[in-house]
Length: 591
Image (cartoon, rainbow, N blue to C red; front, side, top):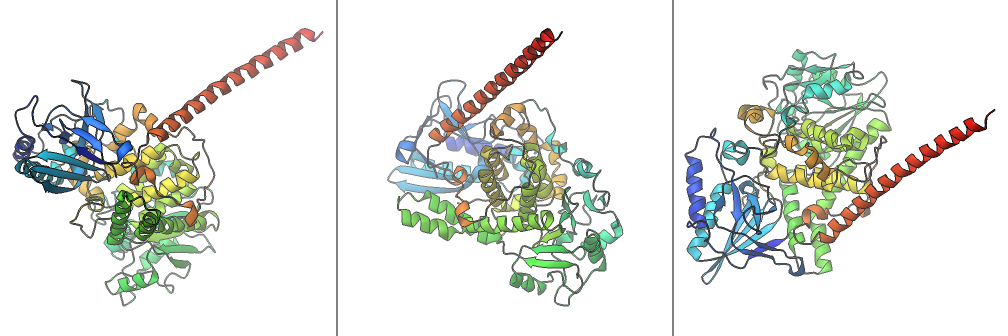
């Protein structure tokens, strides 16, 4: 974790207000300003102090020009050059602040800002009162109660909007891609008013043989109303992945014939299917006492149930906290580092998720069997597995737009509660039981596959890092809310900008494009052996080690690839010219 320290903090230049006064005045301004009003961006600008990394030779120097809160939008969480002078500025979204610590040594006060992207910023401020005032103001601005007070509702893009990202990946468009091959499926609007399932989108893909009345009955039998829907159609053999919530069998072994008919409608004559339950058997059995449960063999004779063990909630959150703590440990002791890394169990979670995803992909591709995947709610581990299985099986999911469509379909529209899961990161002391790095784990798993198949992905590591950053703190509205119903009530499409509108501009896409990419239409099978899994340095170690030489190596690689393309083009041109000359010679020699 890179720690940034200010050796001095001055509150003068072109403002005669202290940083506390500016922050406090702006906070009062926010409270009395209507949500619909166009107000300035909420970026903390750290001014007029010299910033030095605490980790010796990897440190960077940053000097800014003024104190206070900059009231203009700019680059998020990055160092940018000031337009008025040659100094640099560090811009940081308030929502990116995970925790604030205060320390005092004599008259000197220290504020340590810990961010959700794992960076740490340390400010040394003369004066205890000034230090306390600044800290309390930043805390107030970084812990807003109302979503509608968050920055995306006030952000105004400073770029030309070429594409409306809110309408780039609608369910109707995704269904159209498969409409010629999935004649046995239909697009249902049974959830048009979110009355059947609040965490599903208005349109879902279901078997054509099942009418909407049956779907309503099935919804009462599944946790949260999450009846089985199509997640992925495997064009190679017509097998499918479905996802849902757990069945509400309870201790009495309740059954639902409509539910049995629905999932059996996906099977072909004489074929069996697999139900992958992401919970261990004992947890699934315990769920029956709370009204949940699992599919009974007697009622689903054509389905084989497999239990896997993917952890959730506080277990994952504690794992992340331990991992970040171990990455911040600068003792340089090898045994201590390896012991802490192992104790975090982060790579173990990666292994379990990837193993389950490979199992799901194997059932479809190699055994020719359809599968139903669920855990308890069907909004966390279920989505990790369905998404990763598609990345393994489907070449389109390994392209930039295909991966964006996957995030929309399998995470945003599928009801992953981003607002709850990403409310805090690894540093906040007041943890809530619903906070969990589920999406970060998924991105880590994708990175593991990308590292093993570096030429099969159109996007690079920076694309994954960007998605992680925006899931936790963003100027865009894409990851706000917990489901489509909440996003509809918040009117995000009308009041905020979509992340995809920014990402899919050519100038931005170039930053996220993998220069090694070569389209690979084959299924890719990642290794899940412990020796094959590595710590994602690009996320967990990027702030406490310099990336200068890696960046230089990457640029050199890009230059070599571009030069190779130029040479290949010249070779092709010379071959055409040679073929033309040989043809002319042949014509001249003929009688």
